[in-house]
Amino acid sequence: MKTRKSTTLKYHSSPSSPSVSDIATTQQQNLASFSNMARKSSLFKQTLIATAFFILAIYALFTTFFHTPLPVSDTVSPSDDAADVSSVEFPERRADGSGSVGKVKVFMYDLPHKFTYGLIQQHGLARGGSPVDDVTTLKYPGHQHMHEWFLFADLAPPESDRLGSPIVKVADPEEADLFYVPVFSSLSLIVNAGRPPGTGSGYSDEQMQEELVEWLNGQEYWKRNNGWDHVIIAGDPNALYRVVDRVKNAVLLVADFGRLRPDQGSLVKDVIIPYSHRISAYTGDFGVEERKTLLFFMGNRYRKEGGKIRDLLFQILESEEDVIIKHGTQSRENRRAASHGMHTSKFCLNPAGDTPSACRELNEPNCSCLCSNQTGIISSL
Image (cartoon, rainbow, N blue to C red; front, side):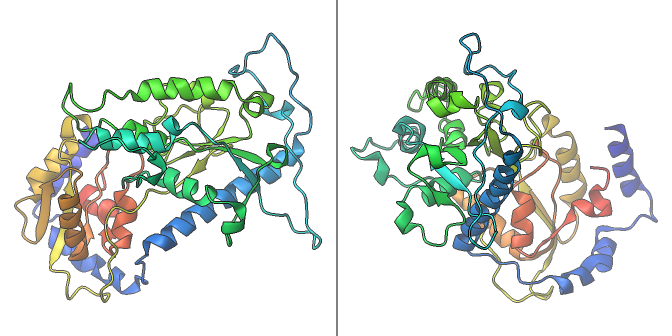
C-alpha cells in the first residue's frame, strides 16, 4: 500500500508528470484498431455454454487415463476428501466412425425445486412478491452471475429440442461422462442481499448449502467417485462458501480463484467462466468524435479495504476536466447511467475490487471503452 500511495502523490505533485489529457492523447489512436465488439445477449449465452462445456469435454477426455475403481469401504464416508483422483473410475470416451471424439455426455440431476426454481420464488418474496402455485413459471432475475441459469436453461429441455447444443444430455446416468448439479448457488447468496435486518422471507443461504450437501451425499453416483465427475457452478466468489470443502472434489465453474484455497480450486480440475454482461452493448460507429468524456467510472467508492484506493482516486479525479467519477450501487437506473457513461467515454476506469476479476472487465470492451487499468493513472494498482 505504501508504493501505491507514493505513486499517486508523485502524479499529483510533479509538474512534469503526464496529465490525464496527455495520457489520452498518447492512447487515443488505440481506438482505431477496435473491431466491432457489440454482442447480443443470445450470442453471449451460446458462447458461454459452448465454452464451458468444450472445456468440460476436454476434461472428460483426460479422465480416460483413470480406470481403477474407487474402493468401496464402510469406513470411508461419502464426504471423505482423502480420495485420490488417480484411483477414481471414469467412463471411457467413445469415438465415432471418423475417429473423432464424440460430444461429452451430461446427466443433469432433477434437483428438488428448493435448489432451483424455489430460489427464484424466495428472491421475489424477499422483495415483496407473492407465492405462486407453479414455481417453474417464474423468471430468473438478472444479475452478473447468471451462468447457472444459462446452463440450466440449455439442459432442461428434452434432448430432441436441444438442436445445436455442444453437449449431449442423457437420461441414463450410466451413460454419462459428467453429472451436472444445477443448484442456483449465486442466486441463493443474494436472496436477502440489500434487505434491512428483520425483513425479507426469512430465507437462509447457509441452510440451503447444508441441505444441498446432505442431498448429494445420498446420491449413488456422487458416492461412487466421491464427486470427482460432478459439475457445480459457484459463480459468485462467495457462493457455497460454507460447504466448499465438502464439494471441492467436483468440477467447479467459478469466476476466479480469489477466495478459494489451492486445495479447493485450481485450473487442474476447475473452469473459469465469464461474468454476464450487465451493461448494454455499444452499437454506434467507432471513433472518438461522439465520446466527449475522457475518463468514466461509476461504482462503489468504498468497495475494498474501506475504500483506501478508490476514495483517493475520487479525490484526485473528481475535479479533473472531462472526467466523470461518481459513486453508484447496483440498480436498474444506475445500470442505465453507467451504460450511457461507458458509451460516451474514451477510457473507463477499472480500479481493484475485492476479487481478482470483475464484471466491469467484460462490460468495458463490450461498450468499446478502453479499460484504463493499464494506464499510468493507476499503474500502482
